[in-house]
Length: 165
Image (cartoon, one colour):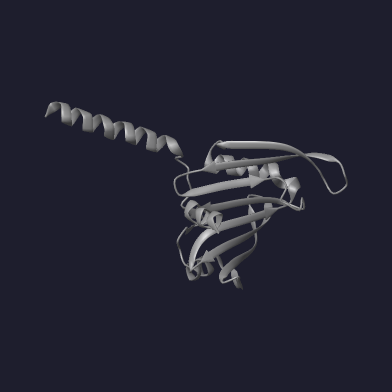
């Protein structure tokens, strides 16, 4: 019996240690709106406008992260918040990046690639990612069109569903 209690206590402690080491800063939402919240909660709390998009709802508008002007877009699928996208001027990337690291800790993945910008000059594209049990955070200095920086905070469940479709 003592061995059983010891083993269960040991397993509990090991599980607690590994669970807490996964990602202690994993966000539950953004700007006080938890993932899974409905659209009316976000519009009431943040005063944002919404529109229909392919059967879903997009809500957002201009805002700030620190001193940086950004545009937030909250994605609601079946009236539940599943993703927040944030676009910003590429030149503000270092400021936004430092705020993300302050809030979410050191990134779990860093990818750097060289690409050509619209004028033909070589630039370094940097992408950072954090992945938890329920949420993934991503930030890059250049979006696909190389016109701005982009960040995304999304539920793993929604990302998994999108990957299958």
